Image: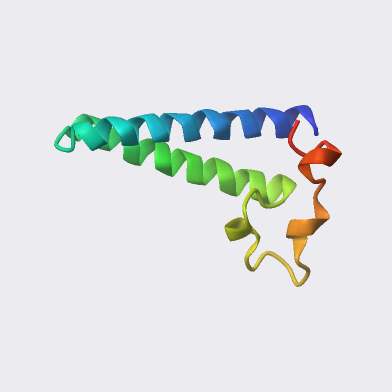
Length: 86
């Protein structure tokens, strides 16, 4: 895994954590508009980062693999036990 790939994956993980935390907050504060704006913002940012990752390094999820090429690229990347998720 390259330094750039590792950095981008780390950013995606941070965004994922932030989204989960905001979701939990919104479960108990459903009318908080500021939290909802943050939730929408971070969801958009994560989507952009995931698209960037997919374009550079291949799909992160099966959903991202759909329609990329004629080959099924999902299985072409290293698996976690092969160092794909370091």
